Image (cartoon, rainbow, N blue to C red; front, side, top):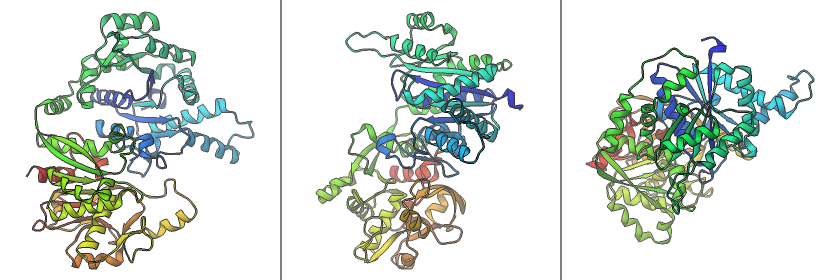
Length: 545
């Protein structure tokens, strides 16, 4: 496709954060792909961090890791899950990256002696990233979501980039604004004034939205659509409704029924195309809505101190992976959050784990709640409760097995106890020098890594092959010095790196436990609604049995 024909769609938000712009932009991607277009997505975050890797999950939600190791906002996980995309460095842009690049270019004399200014050089750098992503992904359409809401100071330069690109290629740029219409309980009527104000804020930045999407508890009614059209200048046929739904996977169907894709294709100048039916999502949503028996899953974690609202964001990929696996068995996950610190204060509470069909210990860092997690693993192993350990969950399982089965008393991870006589989990040698220099950003073992699976194991049977690729995000590994001792005690290392140096999967034999599996990887990043990850699928199967 000629460069001048590539299309760019900007998606901005108004009134409140947490609107679901990521889901909305993913739904539009799904719809446009169904029209036969090649689509890629970009998330722009306004913070000065270079990536999301150094931000606490409770501060900004889960850190999603792309195949190339880029640590990103959780929205990229939503993008990948909805349309089965594989994204990377080009698809995640932060203010920190932009300033870093502009300053480096100036130091390299790449501006030919010009005085470098915030405008136009910063917006120009942003635009160059948009074009680079479109070229790298060979996309017909590049959908660019701006984090936050219009009116925030941090968005000014990104809005300027959108304005400049529209000026440069007016026929190839489309602006979509997603804004919230509240229904105050004391009034009971949907109010459009905040959304109108958000649109006018966009006007003040030199951007005229082509399409408006109203987020609200209920669908937009005709009076609201008429009012929005009259007061914003957006034609009524370009105003769409995105009400609350039971499942995020219903959003593409809601928007598709209003023929938003047809309107976008028309505005962008494409020839008229057959309106898609999205049959795969129709079937998926029917499954989701069907009344199903629950599967009770306990998640033993640590990001609990800020209240329940933080949990879903901290573990969003794990939650979605459990949903995908349960739906395949026509079941519904019933998730229970378990604070491992409670087991440190009151060890007897660990008995409550018996009431769950299965337990997961997800990823995490640091010593907070570690002993509680180890107590949980011991109870799970001894009482034969299905278990899936993810990253830190593998490390905790190895520590527990070393202490209580291999009789290596005081075995631990050096992340928590550097003086442990049996450091069964230790930092990767190449990481020590980095940490000594306080080099934390993007320095973990990140992204796709291969593993060789041992034939006949639970893990190998789950995957149905003996070579796999999984995504990683960690600094610590099973210490090679203790592998033979652990194997002799009965622990199975069912997957290893190609050079046999790193232990990627562990398990207990079926005769000892119905399903006790853990991986150093993050398989939750690769699960899809219609294609659940094998480890989650087999875990849920064991829970049901």
